[in-house]
Image 1 (cartoon, rainbow, N blue to C red):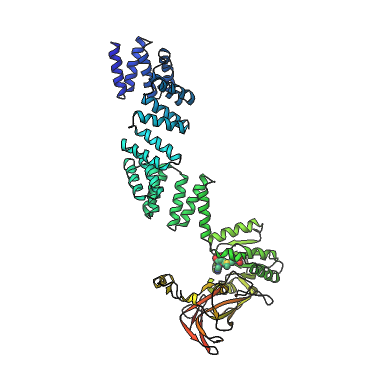
Image 2 (spheres, rainbow, N blue to C red):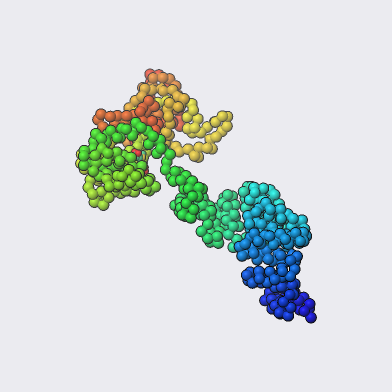
Length: 578
Ligand SMILES: C[S@@+](CC[C@H](N)C(=O)[O-])C[C@H]1O[C@@H](n2cnc3c(N)ncnc32)[C@H](O)[C@@H]1O
């Protein structure tokens, strides 16, 4: 009678009706408290129901009655492991394996417990032994794959994951891992196939969304990549890596503010995250033109401003620094005796850094950094009163390209006192006509090393000068160095729009025969009446280099002739015609 009941309970147990099975096992044990098979099975049912403490008690009774029962040993092992006593758990499961070396469940359990205990090598061995007995256990293949992957044996791990999905095509994690590995190998097509399978099986698989985002990002589908990253973020929660990936994606979509925000979120979660730190830094570096470093490294330039400020600023003067950049000239002005400096900077990231620089130097009470273009400054709001001294260094290689003329014109009219000292005081162009085979080749682009590269001209801007270092360019000077226009920064020419330039015709004496390819020009910067420095090829201030304007149609000249050069000056451009 009890045998029939026991069989019925086992049937219910196997079909997952655990409560019903428990009831019958308990009845049988009430009738016979030493009925070992029922105790062992009841322990197993309780374990399945998550009542681990109860399970341990019942299983201990079963174990006392029959210490060799491998099922009891396995269940006891599981229970102890679940209760946090991994060592005891492993000891029981090992006994089960020793008692029945072909018991696949016990071996698989041992392998899983070893994996949880962090004993990867032993776990791997145990999974291999499990698979020798039954090669169809997909989870065992999956775990083999995971261990091999973390040991760097990527190819072997791929085989294991493939075997896992052969035996269990629904094993999402294996598809997802395969997708990840294929993507890392650059096999994006296969990666996409595996990840699509994973997402079809489980549309909420966060890792698969993350990997799919990476694949789509790399292969250029930025919109879809964004969708997958957002899903991954929603499913995985605040995931550092997804923040970094989103940062990279926004960066590549030129959404720099969004990118910055994502990197910052990643760093909030993990302040040591090297990738987020590096990418954030690179991004802010790329937002600032590299010439800022060359400029700050130009000691002659810095010293010239320092000494001009020392000479001009009277104790207690107020100073306006237009285009403060790092804040350098504003700080020099304070050192020279200024009581207050208003330092404006139009580029927001630069203004932010200038604020920090000024604070780092303890000058925040004397210097007010304002993130604005100078033309937008308002007396009474941004500055208490008009300034006594105006300092600026908004000069490009050809003086006018950074807008110095309109900016100073506005400042003289609106932001400084009449008769204010202006630093620098002015600038005078110098120029020379040259022949150069090197630069001629790319103005416009023609034959390069025997190939027709003229299509490359789509990237070339016509009618503009380029920054060069004349001493590094193979060239012949065909004229003496001659002066062009001079600017007095305290008294500027009237507004001259680019569409209506001032045209000046110059007669230049040719002193060597050759082909005039272009004009190279630079400037002497008058800091004050006593101090002038040059940006020329032999000048003191090196970072500006020289400007080269190449003629589209070069002209043959003979020594002694006069060459007519038209110069078109406007507020922000300088062009030439021959
Ligand atoms: C050549 S840098 C000089 C930086 C710094 N003054 C120095 O000498 O080291 C010129 C800076 O002026 C800024 N700038 C140019 N014109 C400006 C204007 N009108 N108002 C505010 N900033 C300006 C540019 O963004 C750039 O950062």
